[in-house]
Image (cartoon, rainbow over all chains, first blue to last red; front, top):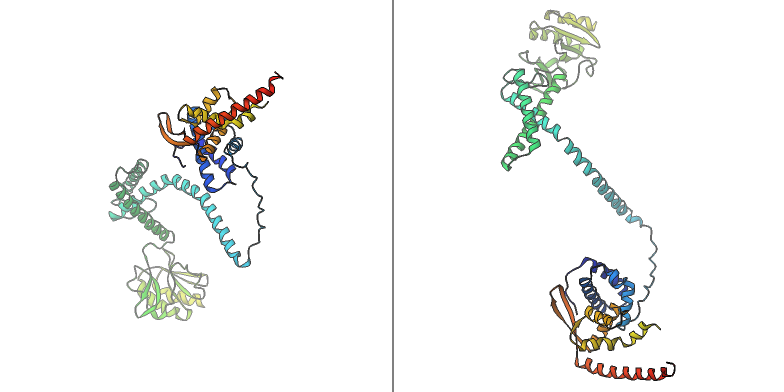
Length: 325
Length: 107
């Protein structure tokens, strides 16, 4: 008969150890005896405080006695069944083994790395709060129309206001980071602000990169009309890109006299930017055209590491002649 | 002499006799036997005996709610059990008389 009693962990643990000693009986009889043992030990445990081992003896003695009194055969020894010898993996399953190993390895690495990563991200939160505040300050600077002149934004063309707004927004961002959002709506607003701040910071870092290369106010490469396959870097002070017939395409980021060897470069001395790169045979023609376009600007003509600085545009042709001689 | 071995032979009779006084549950039967002097009787032996008597139809069982815990499994003597008690008691008495006679001169 199957009976239902409240589960007692100690009784269940004792029962589990007893169940092993019933292995040789029929499944039905095993079930009945397990119910009996649960009933017996449960009753005794209910009457007397203590562990079943102390109340009714160890499982081996208890089950032996129970089986004997119930007219059942003694506990039989478990037959020894030797485990089959392990076969080496078949060649076609080697990939499966490798995949399994890699999978296991990946799981272990992930299990080991995730807590470290999570801790790192947690530790970096204050830095992110500060960065968010700075990003918002640059955004504010951008909205007011004055961009940064370095590491701080200008607010209404005032570095002091830029510094003030940066400090204020950093303090606000850190304070909010430490306290958290009071509502879902506030959390959503801060999430949007964080994304915008990140974009603002990314734009600012891009601007700084251009500043580092000295390309402020410089536009290019410019596509030349009727010659879409040719481009030139043109200074904004030039009214038009230089005539296409003598131009050799140059690429953004290439410094003069590096990949333009063998060419004549016309360089802006203020920014160090290559304005035009031409083949030597076109240099005189380019000099003529540059003279008309450059106005009163000073220029440097450069060829194979040698430079001539011209203070007068009319000297461009002579400069080219001097360099190519 | 190991009385536990003697008790094994008559444990059926002892258990049935206890149940003649009224329905009872396992632990109470064990307690009654111990109070009667069979202090070495084991719980497993009593429950094994009850199980065998139940399988043979000499006792019946039923569940009864308990005030102090889970339901208890009570055993009651069947008609066949009562008849078995009479027969075993007669056999036991005869056995005791025989042994007493044998041991009379020794005592």
